Image (tube, rainbow, N blue to C red):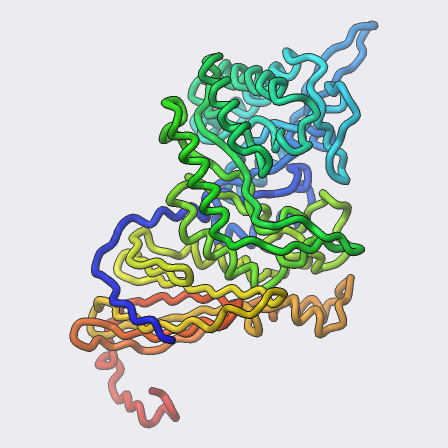
Amino acid sequence: MTKNIAIPESGKPFKNRATYCVGTGKMGLALQEEYQQHLEMVQEKINFKYIRGHGLFCDDVGIYREIEVDDETQITYNFTYLDKIVDSYLEKDIKPFLELGFMPEQLKTGEETIFWWQGNVSPPSSYQKWADLITAVLEHLTKRYGRKEVVTWPIEVWNEPNIGFWAGSMEEYFKLYDFAAEAIKKVDSDLQVGGPSICGVETEKWLRAFFEHCIEHDSPLDFITRHCYTANKPTRKGHYTYHSLRKPTVMIEELKETREIMDDYELTEGMPLHITEFNSSYSPQCPVHDTAFQAAYIARILSEAGEYADSYSYWTFSDVFEEQDIPHSVFHGGFGLVAWNSIKKPIFYTFEFFSRAGDELLYRDDHLLVTKKDDSYVIIGWNWDNPAEEKTAEEKSYKLELPSLGQQAVIVKKEAGKDITDPLQTWSNLGKPSYLNEKEKQLLQAAAEPKQTDSKLEAEQESYEVKLNIPLNQLCMLEILPVEDQTDQHPGFDKQEFYGLE
């Protein structure tokens, strides 16, 4: 059934935060060549403002060192790799959203670790040494990059202390936070600090306890962070983790709930809320991340999340990622927008399309977004359907009536998704090679490109009529641009002599 929509001439601000921040694995991965290639690709087309990752204090970045000199222990700080990492970010016009963690080997109190690369999650042996480490890093960054720059970098204390990424108690996390926040403000009171960076378990308990702690102890707090994933419990089979997924609107409801809790406290009411990780599955070995379904599914979240969160950082931009060992294949269910060998996944275009959206919202529903951008329209459509579930979805059809931008316009349509931009299917057709030769690499990179078409649009009674069909597991973007007909500047032009030109 076709849905007829009359689009108004004016709307309301579109709170689009899709390009505010993106995730990476651990910061040390930025020293790899392919990582940098992927980041350059992402920045060229999407241009995220911030990047957030784990492992700032892990030993592969190598900042914290204790050495023996004349039978005395001296603390030294080494910023060689940190500078190289941050330099590479700023060169690509992306700023760090700093996450303070995990515990340096020489500052740990226990052997508890997470991930294949063994990030230590124990409390520090000395909270004062923890605070001094933070002070030293921020003072160095300020000296190297300038105060004006560094005060724009948000600072988050730790990662997911409520689900195994912290070996201490909730109260010990609050102590870790207090020492960190005080150290941050000691360097510069304008530096912004936040937490508690929780995910999924006992959300309300943790948020309320954290807010009440900050109120009672007058702890600095400038923004709130949490994470959102929409997957149900996993099933593990060999290399892969499989999930059923809840509806994408589950994340929207979680954001509403978080805002309601924040609004119960004068301290946090109206405070910035940053979702510093989100995705469908929380496993870097879940095939859904590589699919056309993912592109349409995540589009629904991007269309509305900005109404409740000041940012939502997709986890992650690249499959150069090592939480569950080194990736075993070009397509392995990795989190990234870009797969190994610089192959764009369909989800890449979800973010590219939303990066092009206008700042005025004219219409929105579960499958369509209509925005105004200067003197043009940007329309984004999506239609997800999980083939593992009972068939309930169908092709979405629209007939839009839009106020004209002039007598003539051009409509440029880009499409991505199933059977159009589907390198995963091409990889399967090639026999699922684990390691690509040059020919296979070129085929997959070509298969990852979107389809682009355009057509002439003429106003009838001061409006345009646009028909749009969105097949299952496809994503599209339509840009409508006004056109000035300059045919009279081409003497002798005869359309009939151009062999089929319309």
